[in-house]
Each structure stands twice: as C-alpha cells, then as structure tokens.
Image (cartoon, rainbow over all chains, first blue to last red; front, side, top):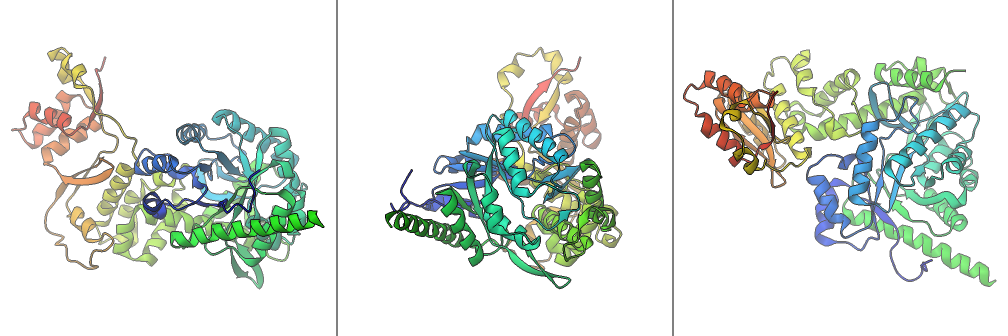
Length: 287
Length: 258
C-alpha cells in the first residue's frame, strides 16, 4: 500500500465536457479521471478526445443508464455499447448504480429507487451477473441518494448491497454524499449505514456537494453535484477512511460546473482528509 | 403486495402524467407526503431532460427564450421519453414536435432551425467511417454501376428550408450579437451537414445534388437517384455527381440489389 504521506495525489475528479480541452492542454497532476459511460457511446470527437486522455491518465467508466434494477430485461444494445466502450478505453474501474431508469420503452434519466425485497434482490443480482459477464469485468455498484422509502421494503439498503456483492462478486462504490443525503431524507443513521457496508467489497468512494431544500416545511437534501463537499460529508468521509483504510476517491461535480481548478482543489482537500486520517491512525498505533 | 413491475410502471406513469397518486400508494410518508416525494424525482427527470434538449438545440432556445423553451420541452418530454440512456440521441423528433406545437405557430422557421441543430448533433456523434475503396468500384462491370445502392457517410445530413436557417444558426452562436438581423425572405436553401476532420461543417449544395443524395440516402440505386435529381435539373451530369460522392469522401459502402 502506498503511504498517504508521500505527497502523491490520490483523489481524482469526474471529467466533464467543458474541461476536456484544458485537461489535454495543461495535464494537471491528477491521479485519475472518471467519465460517464453514456457520453462516450457515439463515434464522434468526444470519444476521440477520451482516447487521447486515456493515454495520460487512468480512467474509470461510470455508467448511469444500464438500469440494473429494471423489472424488464436489461437493454442488450446498451450492454453491448458498454462492452465496446470498456474494450476501447480499458478503464481501471467500471461502476453502475443500485437503481432503475427504464420501464417499458421509456428511459427516465434518473437513478430511481427500488423497494428492497427478495424479488428485487434476486432480479438485481441476476442483472449484475449478466452485466459482468457481458462486459467481462467486475462492476462496482453505487448506493443511490434516496428521497423516499417504499411501504414494503424490508431489507435495509446496506444489507441489500452487501448481499448483491456476496452473490455476484461485484464490488461496491460507496458514495459518502449519497449516504449523508439518504440518511437525512429518510431519518437513518449515516454512520450505522456506512458501518453496515461490507468493508472488503468497497472499491471506490464518491464525494460531491448537495443542496438543502424546503419541501412542505421539511428539509430535503438534494444530491445535485453542484457545490463543494459539505463539512458534514467531509466528516463522514473521514469516518469511512478510518474504517476502510485508503480507498480511491472521486470528486463529482455536474451542475453549475466551476473552473477546473476548483475541482482540483476539492480533490486535494480529499487527499488532506486522507492524510489526517492516516496520521491519526499512526498515532493511535503508537500509543 | 405489488410486484416490482407494477411499482415501476406506477412511478413512470406518475412522472409522465404529473399525477403522483398511483405511485404514492407504494410509498411511506415519513413526515413528508408520498406525493411530494414522488415530485422530487419527477422534477429531476424534467429538469435534466430539458437540459439535454437545451444542449442539442441551443439556437432554438436562444430564439424562443429560456422560459418558452422549458415550456415546450416539458410538453415534448411527456410525449416522447428518451428511448435509451445516451442523451445525445434524444430529441430527433423535437423539430416535428415544434412544427405541430400550437404556441409556435407564426414562427415557421423554428422547426427547420431545429432540424439543422439535430443534423449538427448527429454529425458530431456519428460513427467515423472510411470512404469506399475505389479499387473495388473500378473492378465492377460497367453495366452494374447504375444498379448500385450507396451508403453515405453516417455523419451526413441533408436539410432543405425555405428559410435562411444557416444564417439564423450562425447569427445565434455563442459570442454572436443577439438580434443580429437575418432577412427571413432571403431565400430557400439546401444544406449538407457532416463531420470532416473532427469538425462539423455546414455547406450549401445545389437542389439537384441535394435530391440526388437524398434519394441515395433513401436507398435508391444510382440510376434511380439520378432520375430523381434530373427532374430538378435535366442538365445534371450523372458521372460528375458520382465522382463528387467519391471526391467528397461521403460514399462509404455499396451493394448491388439482387
């Protein structure tokens, strides 16, 4: 394991279209970049630029459209496009979500929630296996941000994720901001949620900003990836690192995209948190 | 206990219709009405799909203003959800939708501007294809040539309009002066849009070449396409029109009908 104190940068950023030219020109010292799979499934200039960037940085492919939780079958065409992209880019990580987006012929462009039941567990695990087989890679499955709980949903979300990982051999992408948002919106204990995730399965962490909205007098947090990581989420991140050890971390920012330098500063802030946690750990061991 | 398929169908219905009640019965309140919780998801779907349309149709948005665009997009999204998760493929029927959208009446050029923007979007994302191997064409028996069908570069689109949509498009690019005057009566045009060397190009072509290439795109043989184009320009030189396909690099594959 690389020491966290050697000055190397470890947290990466999500690569967004408006930053591509600047990254290619200035090659900032970032350890890795992550792209949304669905933006690179055409044949145009975007993919050509990504292939160039891939020569300079490790890239992870983060899918948002596979709809692994759909009650219908997986979209075979989309799966084959994902396989082609993975073959072309050779990402070091490939991830998707615990969610669904398609029902019937319509795609809703959202990571919609699942009731956590035996039925949905069987189906979701089957789809993860099918997808892993199709792309020939292990997937990391990300916990979604939640705004509702179904009346019949007897399995707690972290247990559901743990069971999917156990059945399919997939890894987990622990989105710390999503845990914070979900816990706040659904009155759950964020620390308890994090601690219930199977440590060995977690292969990546996501961090992002959220907004605070008022809905009929109740505070609802919206995971809009449009601001700096909040102080509470940094604290939860530190807790995650204390429990998990060093995990590749990524800063996501999608709405109100700021200058590239601000994203890089956020990635460095994540490295500083990781450094502090490591110092704490060393001190604790020395005591 | 409802099945997963029922729950998903009800949630999809609630998001499209704006009536959260069918989905709300599956949802626990937890201090906030289930309907309000469904609405959070519905709002996100509409906002992000509107943003996807704005990204593909920035000139239409600039012409009609943000508020009207969002209003039109809301109606469009409810009638035409994306068929898949690649949002650069979303909006192909938006020009037709605008043509039939009552509040757009009186702005007849808008659907054609949207067609041009869609063509630019297609060109930007189309698969790159190499031109056909000329040696293979040269090896064909001369009498087979007219019977060939021609597959054109997938990045190529043809847009005709009685409005000067290319000038409207140009005058509404980022950085151009808002309100820069375009004379709407400055004549009809035939445009060819395609990607060359990683750049999308828009150029004027003659009406006869337009109809020749349109016919080829529709699957006509060279002979039939030439006959179609000759109705517009009896002087059209077929040999020259075919050579131009090769010179332009837009002829990517061919086959002989049985």
